[in-house]
Image (cartoon, rainbow, N blue to C red):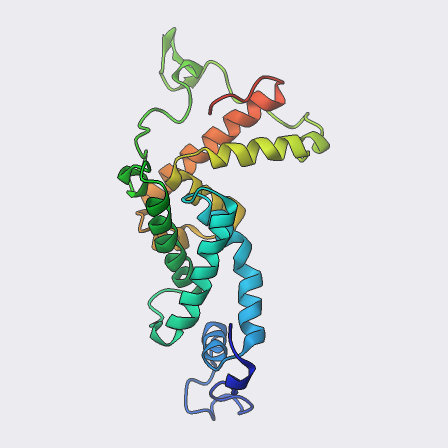
Length: 240
């Protein structure tokens, strides 16, 4: 952790804009980074509160348990503190932190479970799953399957009671389905739909093209929706 004794005001602290020897307006990102580098523990605590839970959720994709994920995140925070002076700002601070997490989680996952295939860490859109996102049997074209028209369209959920859509069982189905997605799909849907990252941020972090990112997100959302359809219809969730 940062030490109180290391506190010192960030450059330009208390000096009107334009008189600190730098740009007239310092960005929020620059102020945050300067505060961290100056040893401001309160700012570091805010950063931990903001990102820690999301980092644990991400680490779980690679390691065997939540306890190990927590360890990986703690190691990441220590690496962040150690590397602040070397951060060059080529990406956002958030992306830099999560990139450290990704690398440490991958390394820890491989070390603790040698059965994890190398392909789990590549950027292939399907990650070994090259089948359609939606069951082919749901499409037809003038009596022939897979022609681009729905034979069994998605069920509308407008008539489903709100408490059922947001109930614990439904949320558990979503969480379980996401947990069992291929790693890249899991990370993309978690970042986009749970953490609220932009597509550009996700591509930067995971080194994906926009096309791959969209395909991974589409596949992940399709699987989650399929699981929800089965759940809301009262059937077994089974495999996605």
